[in-house]
Structures are given as C-alpha cells and as structure tokens.
Image (cartoon, rainbow over all chains, first blue to last red):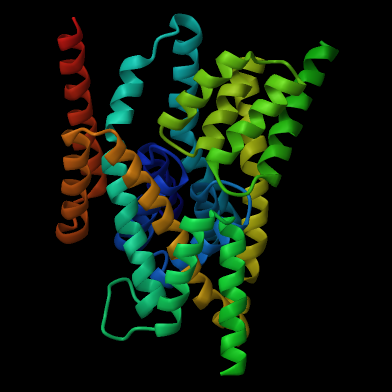
Length: 184
Length: 187
C-alpha cells in the first residue's frame, strides 16, 4: 500500500527532523533512498538544489516531489500531510503548555541536547551530496569530476568569506557549468 | 462573527504570502513573521514572539510550519493553527508539483543536465558551509559532551551506517541525562 508507506515514511521524517530544514536531509536520504528506493542519489541532489531555490521547507518540497514521482498528486498530498502531522500535534501541544504554564524548559533542553548529533547527521548527508557532485554516485570513487571540485571549493570560499546569498552562489555555479559545457 | 471570519482570512492569507515569498528556509521566516504579526498586525507581543521562535526551532518538523502553527494557535486557536498550516504548506506543494511534472522531460535535456550537475557542486557547498557554521557553534559551547556527541554520531552514521532514528533517541537520552544532572547540581 504505497500511500500508507508514503504517509509513514514522511511522518517519521517530520517527527525526527529536529532543528530546521537541513535536519530533514539525512532522514529523507535514509527513507527515500536507502529504505524505499523512491529516489536516486541524483534526483535527491536535484531536489535539494530545487529546494534551495524555491520557497518552502526542504521536507515539504521533498514530500511533494517524492509523492508525485511515486504516486501522483494524491501521493504528494499524502506525503505532505504525513510530514506536517507530527509538527501539528507536538507543536500545538507545546503551544498549549506554553500558554497554560509558561514552562517548556525540560523539553527544550532535551531537544537542544540533541543538536550536536543532528549536526553530525547533516554532515553525513552533506558528504553524500559532495560525493554526488564529485563522482556522480553516493559514495566517493576515483572517478572525479575536476570541474565540480573546483566549483565546490570556490563556492564554499565565497560563501564563508563574503557570506553571499546561497541562491546566487548556486545560480552562478549552474551558469558557469553551462558555459563551460557549451564552450569546452 | 464577521470580525472573526476576517481574522481567519487575514491569518491564512498572511501565512500563505510569507510562505510563498520566503527563500532560504526556516531561519529567515521567523524575522519575517515577527515583522508582520508583531509589527504590523500587533497580534503577538515581542517577548512572546521570542519564546514562540525558540519553540518553533527546537520542535520536530520544519521551522516554518512550526512557527505558522504557533502563530495560528495564538491568533485563532486550533482552527487558526490548521488554517496557518494550510497557508504555509500550499505554496511549496503547488510549486514543487509543477516543477515535478516537468522534471523528467527537463532533466534529460543536455543543457539542463550540465546546469544541474554544476549546481550540485553549489548545493554541496551550501550544505557544507552550514555544517561548518554549526560545528563552530558546537565548539563555542566549550564543553566536552556536545563535541563527543558530534564526533561519535558522525563516526557511527558515516562509517557504521547506524540507523539515524536510533541515534536521535540515544542523543535525546544523553541530552536529558545531562539536563537532569545539571539541574541537580544547580540545586
């Protein structure tokens, strides 16, 4: 039952992605690539790229994209619903507790305690994206695309030093890649 | 009654608008919501907004959705929360559905493919940049426990493919024990 699978997978993604958009990345990779083979690593990298350039949370964008690819518009609706369901329940509950008791310290400090682990998981997803950009597969191989390595290094330096807008950096790398491909 | 309906409509349209025009994820959306709901509409106090932002950021799920739920709940109870979820989710749902309909045809185009391949280097750089900033934040805490959690989680997930949901539970347990011990000490 594909709809139930989508619902359950994206429910887990919504439930366990703690601390913002990037936290959803390793979970999506785990669910949609490792467990279900709904996405290839390439389409995962594509949807991450598209997500950066369109409005909306990464998790919702992915839910919609995966849902449509796997089971059409109803699939997109089911996956998106699954993705926001945990938030809807938990956050409404927290809002209730906050306005009633003004105290959510324990919950918050536990979630904050999670943060270093979440950072580590985002790092592993980042490495997969690097492998995809450099070698065209989800692990590093000796077959390296030198152009992309250079693009990556330049983009990273530009982002870190001048704090340029990520959308701009990505559009520029796309344009450079296109020009290089046409000219060379 | 009419006033209430108007408030719901404003809530829905405002979250829809914020969601449709916010690029760059959850961290950008909170200042925007603050500007609208605290500054313009005056539905929420400034200090309250800080608490709501903290809850949105530390709860599971997308920050933008969480913030919308909190603001919706405050502005119109459970129906308000549902309306603002709808407002927050609708724009990405529609936009990605359209993109996804053209994706296959689009992706097999030679020039699009060149562009996307190069952009994958860009998106990897964006993510690694975020990771570096987050690691610096962890280092700034100047505590051994978070650093150890970071390193151990990375090794277990990257090299031993440990299930990340199990890791989240384990890290949550460590976080709770740390919190409980810290409180005991404070007393």
